[in-house]
Image (cartoon, helix red, strand yellow):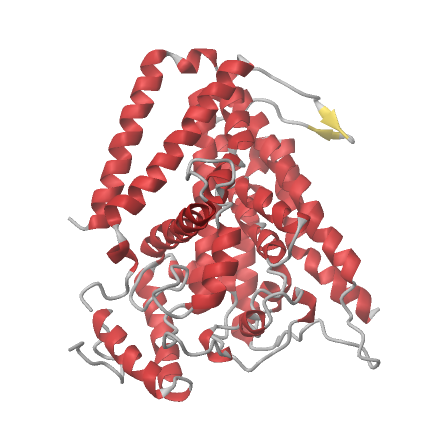
Amino acid sequence: MSKVQQALLAIAAFTGVAGFILYTLGVGDHHFNPLWALGTSIVFLVILLIDVWMFFAISGEDAFKWDPDA
Amino acid sequence: MHKFLVNIRYFETPILIFATLVGLVVGGPWVWTGVVLLISSIIIDWATSASKLFHCEPAGRDENGDLYGIDWFLKVMMWVQYPVFVMLQLALVWRVYEFATGNVFGPNEIFGITIHHGVTGWEMYGATVSAGIYMGLGIMFGHELAHTKGPTFVLARWMMALSGIAHFCYAHVYNHHLELGCEDDPATSPRGRNIYKHYLLSHFGQSRFLYVMEQQRLKKKGVPFISWQNRWMRGYAMSLPTIFMFWFAAGWIGLGVMVGSWVISAFELEVLNYLEHYGLIREKGQPIDYHHSWDVAESPFTQWGFIEIGRQADHHDRGETHFWELEDCGAPDTGYGYYAMLALLLVPPAWERFIKPRLADWDENRASEGERKIAARMNYLAGWHDMPLCEKPE
């Protein structure tokens, strides 16, 4: 499995777990409450930042090289 | 009259964006307007490009040397796109609210036009794809403004943030424009890479560029990475109003629709990056030249719709020059417009079949000696053993 595939898998796993926790906490029941909605949106933003960071961290520099063996 | 026509032609895409917005507002089958317009654009672009009847002249100058493009008029046109995109997004939020809750909201009639209330699952798909397509095509206005300084650069960031890609503005100007044609530029696709892989690598690669840039910049300033001064984090934070709107209106379904529209818009941005420099090679350290970009001079539909972004060679030579001042530079040209090539690159084998003879010609007639050596290696790595230049790396 390539580093990029590992990174995508890790992102999917992390996002899935984070989403499941939020779902279990029942955040979806309060989305019409503006304060709850704002708080949850910030959590989603943090999840996005962690996802993007995970891609950099796991795939490494080689993922962006045209010829990683060079 | 000529001056009027030169300026008005750049309203091609704003009109299509507005039509998509109207489609979302009217509802019912009209939510598919954006999809129908994209398919029509592909057909028109194919027809006009393939006929070879329409060479697109630059906006140009009059006999006194004055530009035909009206500076204030075209600038206002670009700035106005931001509120239009916000309205497009609000229309999508409205539709997903109706879909998720089953509630009817808003008037039944606007200017004598009946508004369809209630959204089926299919119509929700149509609305999401239509909005995503035209949020994505609007990115070129963000691109143009990203080449400016001050408030209009910030406006470009907000425009991109509607699709979660505010990092583009820095990465494009400080990475792509300095490094294109070699592997230090994630937005340049090497030979053999398909659009789907390029989408991932270019998207994350450009974000990574700003991440590393901010890491180094903030370290020099003695500011912690997690700080409000961090332009990488701030760019994502600019997407918070969008996330909030979708979540507030429709919860998990709203979030799914937002992600769908973001994926489509960001994909279109990477399609442009892909088409502008696919397979072209520059030796690291050598100057950027006209032959490092693909121009699109044979397709007026693309040139007008993409506000002359297809004059890539001149754009890379004079990055801060407005689109209505760009000229023909005799750069390589595939002979087809972006819409036409979009239809091809979605099917990677068809794209390779199309582009390989053009790259072989580039290798033969445009590339420097050093670039030819790299091209030979890249052709081998791409598995293109039938190319005239092909050499196994040592």
